[in-house]
Length: 246
Image (tube, rainbow, N blue to C red; front, top):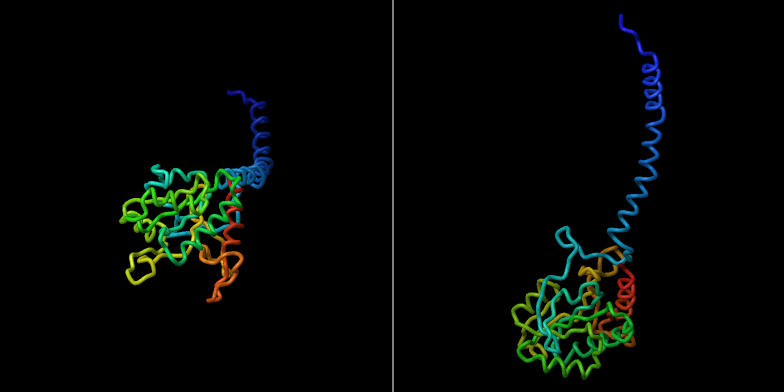
């Protein structure tokens, strides 16, 4: 006759009762407290301390600056990697522009001065008249406007690549137009890019991203003859927000 081991039976019974009563409580506590805490930490580590500025979503993905390679006013090859970990403003212009470009670049110089102590701020200016705007011309233009930020690159290159970058990469219109003043037509807006290369902007009253910032009106002017308000002050505020992001 086989002898029953009552000590094992007792231990098994205690384990069973413990499992029924206490394990669910432990699991519940872990689920509600510790795991939730870990999730919060994980989200913070992945996203960083983001501002309230919106991402521009295209086809379900945040829009990012495409790859490019051009030559700046100092004869140095510049790519998107030169703006890595930097907040920057992008524009398309040309040095002989008789209309909006002088206003746009005067505004950008003012922004340059406001953020002159920030090594992680820059500007990307792409000429839409590369045939005329050589390295030497861009250098003279930079000197005339007092462009001193080492991260402000005035870039020239192949016309086809520049127009593709403007119209497809940044969605900032640019075109050759013999009937336009100066022979070219282009957007008077600035794009704002964060440290990771994503397009960012504030939202409108309906919660939609504004996408771009009007660069053709000065802060002092406030409103133009068409009733459009200046957005340089808004751009400055949003640059400051992005500079605080990690």
